[in-house]
Amino acid sequence: MSINNSSIGVVLLGVSAFAARALACSCAPPPPPCQAVGQTPLVFLGTVISANAEGVFKTAQMHVDRLYKGQVKETIELFDDGMCDGPRLEAGHQYLMYTFIFETGAIPSRGCSRSRAVEAADEDLEFLKQYSAGRVPTHVSGTVRYRPDEPEDSKLGDPGRTPMKDVKVTVSSNDRYFSTSTNSLGQYSFTNLPPGQYNVDAEFSGYRLNWAPNGLTLHPNGCIEANLLMKVDRRVQGVVRDRNGGPVPGIMVEMMLANREVKSWQQPVLLAITDDQGRYAIDGIPPGEYFVGINIKSTPTKQHPYASTYYPNTTDVAQALRVGFSLGASVQEIDLRAPEKLPIVTIQGIILNPDGKPPRVEDHPQVRIKEPKLYGQIEEEVIKIDAEGRFQFELCEGVPYSAFAFAGPVRTQIYSAPIEFTPTRENNRLVLILSKTSADFQKARSAFEMTAPAK
Image 1 (cartoon, rainbow, N blue to C red):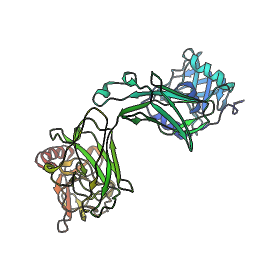
Image 2 (cartoon, rainbow, N blue to C red):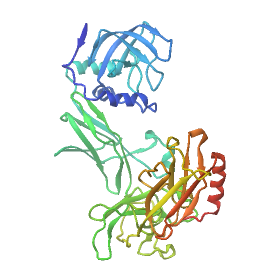
Image 3 (cartoon, rainbow, N blue to C red):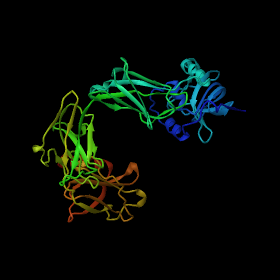
Image 4 (cartoon, rainbow, N blue to C red):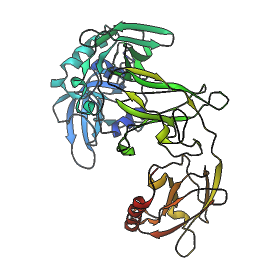
């Protein structure tokens, strides 16, 4: 016997999306019923007939008492792999299930959903009653809150952030736009919107939208809960031009704290890549004094082959101008001049064992090219290594880099000593000898980091 309720709704999410969700065990709070029903292929009320706790997966036989969405047999089997959220199914108890069916026919009882015992499902059942009767209007709602600067914000969840009144909120779908303003509690709401895909934006003088969900899908008789975060609008923007005044696309513009005592890895990541018109914008800037420039925090690479250049146009940080931001809103226009591209050198390398022979192909030898002192990894493409241990890649001429290689099974990998090198057309050879155990490599790396010059 089959129960079919296709008139209620259409399955809009694929099995693969839900399978991925079931394997992710960091679950956010579940959405409200009107949103959960829209994004779930199978929703039903059922009573557990029997439960089996033997083996890796627990299973339960369930009678489907009422089907709200999807298609399924009257009696089904669900499996419980112990992962993610979900109710513990016990014989004789009734549950409201939000789930899906794998291509194999298996039905999970867990997976970051609103599934719950019927005793805790009053809100859901009331909504489903209206949903089944087709009397639920669509709506999009949420709360707009202020997000303070770090580190204060790390101590706050949404309830600790201040709601913002009179924020203009706009939802859009293709060429349709709908706007409203938040109330004294920071809340907004749109009712009876046409089903479809929506984006949401918010505007408030002196602030910018810091976070909003993307790709909102409004289902028939459904809803979307979209909470938004606003921050003080501190921004640097401008255009990067070449020596002739033309715009330069693909340039990496960076900011770094002028306080040199703050370690590089402790600084916020503030960067932007120029668009086709050479324009860039960096926002979300915490209060402080900064240097602005091109490649001032990152090592030049083939993808970004420019020497560090500070505003207003100097390679010497001592001559750079500082850009300051206070607690209030501030938008600063800073145009930059791009230096000439650095020449590119093709490095010819080889990996060898201590006996002079190349590592075995089945040991999967690999090379890592990093910034000086083994900081960030810089190559963006996998370096291919042939059966003779040979490889090649391209780097900027005259720029210091560091490198090492490794090969073998994870627990018994053999490493080369880390080395620092500066490519030139005459110095374009790299030999990496696999002679160190993991423990030896860590010792060598520590010594290397102590002696290698910082960027």
